[in-house]
Image 1 (tube, rainbow, N blue to C red):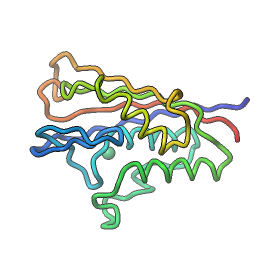
Image 2 (cartoon, rainbow, N blue to C red):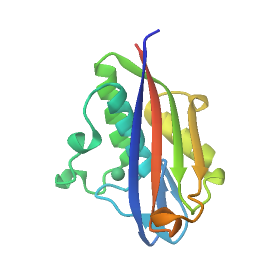
Image 3 (cartoon, helix red, strand yellow):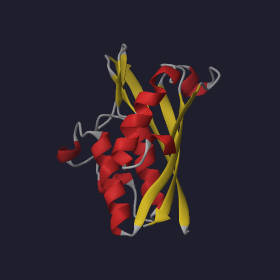
Length: 159
Ligand code: MG
């Protein structure tokens, strides 16, 4: 079976006022992520990982932050569009793995909700979607709570 791997990275800044949209889930709390879209860094990193594996451009080219149509856009919709672009090129998503680097919130209690939401957008079983959380040990801009970062790896297989 022919497979390809792609990597995606994204980061967004926190601002006051919840909920926090992350991994397709609304997490109650007192902060959200600032973005032209809904700021869902997990969905954005996965979108870029798919496009990278398919050698099919990047999220900024697909969804320009200068286009008013993308303001407040549901990032799972962007993820679905990347999956569709990969499909059109003969690829399907086989597996996705995500690391969220943040001091808050703790990811563990939201992990399965995110896996389900992301699996729905990816069109695969939640058993093939991994979500992991870790802190930055208090260091740097993540450690100070300025924002969070996400790294994603996706495997595509020939349809
Ligand atoms: Mg982003």
